[in-house]
Image (cartoon, rainbow, N blue to C red; front, top):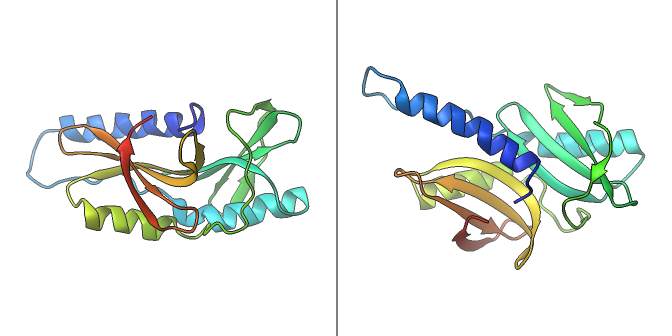
Length: 172
């Protein structure tokens, strides 16, 4: 996964999960904040409206309040946009791209909520902690759902860009 956006999201969620795991009292289980991948289609539409048409991305990922969209600038850099609360925030300064750019033709940008539900059906005892559309070194462009098991182990559940389950792989 991308060292920038997804790992930052994972670090923030890890803090939340540790806080929940360490909190005392009652036997009720507190869920991690939901990943807002449902906002990906609106985020893509907002980026493409702001930039004047279809874009090349290096990653699209979700966090508990919105989505991060990393847009390739064509000169080896990327711009990081955040979409939350129905608003596209201005991008940060260009940074060196950390992945190969991809377009969205043939990508089910709206698949995220279905993929999270599929993972929970397949593995009811796990917690999804990240979801991203990314280029992986071996698998190429995939939806990557990072999950934590009940004992803290991490795996990635991979899906095709169209949302077809490929299988689990060790976290990279």
